[in-house]
Length: 433
Image (cartoon, rainbow, N blue to C red):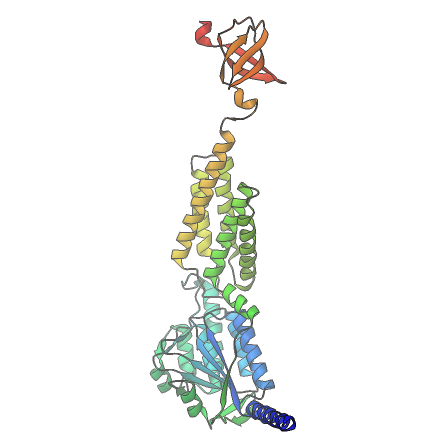
């Protein structure tokens, strides 16, 4: 019986391993999802996805896309990787309600197969500054011409509507999925991934100069997620998160410096500030905006040490607000910080800094209450005749005291100084008179 059980166990193990091997060798497509801005983390994720699909023998790589836009430099790199890919890349704008705006237009056009779900849109690829405003002058014209030619080149490479691609850049036109299919901007309108694979099966594509036919019937879908590092970088590529981390870091460090030994604000503030600095390395920033923020913090702190009846504090808040608006105002990105976040953060940080500065200033200027310094100005009573030295009773204690002249027992005296452990006193004015 033991031998029979062993043989049966071995048989089922072999059958299981065989089934897993068959499943692994079955045709499959890789799926990655991009939901958010286009940034270096997304660039790395897509490049990794293309390489993995090629190495793993995937029939295709599906990029499910929903983006408002992002970094121009990252977009260029992604497009370059897709155009040069030797594995079919299907860009699918989904789910319903999603859009391929700005940078998403270039990525969608670059796909070997471009598809959209019902209820989606694509377009508005005109380059703008970080605050959303149009870039004026020669620089604006230069960037617009580059983006238009970039979109035209991609469309021509994939045999799509180059004229519409130019208009999407120059006039910020945006269209629905039905219009996109009619205008030859995309190839497929698909309800879901299964419908996409069904419609894409058998289509011919150009893989870096080599024609290929898609074989997507009955393929498995293997979904891949971002690595932890990519997720962190992707989160830090959000200007709203980076801005909040920077404000929290500044506030935490300021609280620690103004109240040494609390520890927690300093540790939390240091971590937040380091994460914010990591994010600022990823995001394109305006250094004038960063300088205004630093100046604003300096003015707010200066209010504590050089009271100016609020002038330094108000100037610091104004500088901090302007710097926040300009921080991500660059030609290379259409990312901005939400205005409500800026106003809330500046108001909170400004209030905390001014409140803490006021308390620190008041404590520095307040009269000491302990030790010999705390006795200055106090009123005492002579208990041992001062002639000129003797004893007085002040603050519930007996002290050696010295006066300028003789003062009798029972008279009131005021402490005006001290020398060593002896107090210097004088007769009260009202008694002197």
